[in-house]
Length: 306
Image 1 (cartoon, rainbow, N blue to C red):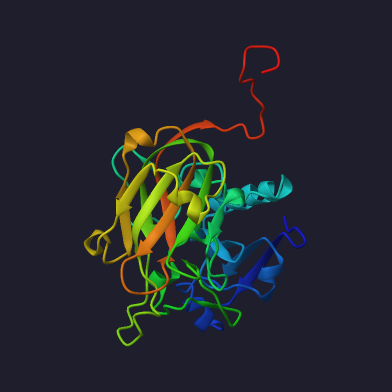
Image 2: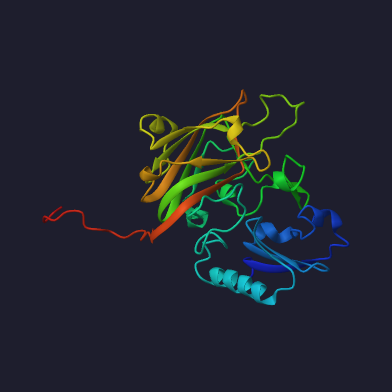
């Protein structure tokens, strides 16, 4: 099942590699070759725990001696690698999975797996931190896993599994979907450092004002967004954020988010006096609709020449 430069398997003895094992809750570690491959399978020698990595992010976990479940995971990711190789494990079909910062409202599902990660775009993001894909990672944010606010080390290299704005506090995120959705709410997780000794201007802020635009064909420019009426504008307050997970549930005007094929989320400003905004995770909650037929041309006129 191995695929050169695509899928590899590795094993770690947690008794000998305790420090790196603890960084993954005493489960696994990342091999030095992970940057050269798309998928990695790792197992613990004494603890039967299996982690699947995609682009240096954990996308699935199998705990315990469960051969059937492990076999299903391996076969699925091997099949994806043998198809077009573009869709990542847990990024496309199936029901929503992965970590959630708060509970789901009754009658609605986590439909984040319908995000078309290949079309994501994030403007004004600091390249020293995560990308748009990072926001939809299925794993629990590292800031909640360990006490290291700056990220966790892999192969001695510190990484950051969150996104931060660059030149100012604004971010512009384009989110295309693989099917039309009815979007009920969003879950936004933001976990800025709580270091009281740090300069307030240096500590990234949580989003305060966000604007949402439905069904744009592409990411909006910042000036362009100012000239377009937002589908909904939301102001977040400090008490809205869950103190344990750093997550806020943003309830939407459901009637305005019925047949949604794409969203633009515009972070207008942050809550504080800083110069940057931080977002760790983003989840989409709602209902799935019909699959989009990308690239299909449709007739829009009845008369000849239209």
